[in-house]
Length: 391
Image (cartoon, rainbow, N blue to C red):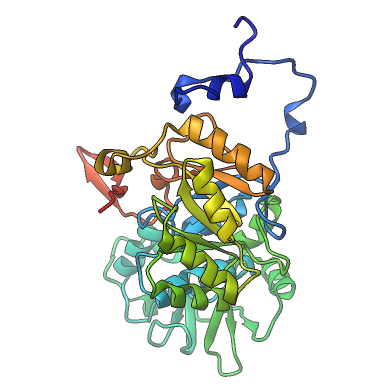
């Protein structure tokens, strides 16, 4: 005991252990921190340099969270508590972002007021906005407004048309990203509206995005240099059409979201998707035993989520009276999955341990990029995180 136990000695008995029950003993260090490399292949075509994935909860992962994680080397899985059309649009926003062109920028019309701009600025953080005749993308560009135009004004009811810059430097569509960035640098501008021959707004390019390519060298990108993003579906029959539409719109991985993955419904879903789209990776689960893992792998699962009731706000163990201590579940499922060349994701209760990858909910749910809105309680700004309860 003085030197600790091997993993199979700890987890080989009848006792189950949570993360809080175990700790790794220190060893000998013969390398520098800079030598540490957490890069891991999730599938043959998906590699994450930061093995962190956000949970597909409707208060956690939308396009903003997916973009932030992909830039940092991880992966976001967009939740499915929305229409198919809305979920596809979330995916498209992630795919558009990596290109450097923002195709859905916030816009205003000349009739909007300084108060309108300040409200949006305080909500989303941007300072510069293109102005079109009716405040919509696709309409004629008539000006631009930046922070220096309005931040120090005392009269918040002033019309934007009275203070906007009308002599706007633009890029002509079509234009590639390198040429657009060159215009930004040459003209010393923070944003560059992209317009067509009719001077109608098509997109926006920001200097900040150019910097992001330099400061996020570990970004998770597909072979065509787009940010990688996942999307979740349920095991309901109608969600097969959701999966089909997501795959048509360049989704990189499908995550079947269920607290109990070892069911005929999930197995049938996996088989049907794989039959129609054999190359699309599927994250299946959740599972906590080797037998559950075998059933999903046999059906065609490419990656497994491990955890049942282990999340900080998950009530599966209380409501359904089933589950397993997460430390033991991760050990046994991963041990079996690795014999089948399948990677695993530790989902829930992550504090100091994990599997090949970790899935985070509450941990990232309080960040600015999560889907939930801020609210104030006792003069403290907070974010609401959903309670995942099985029905």
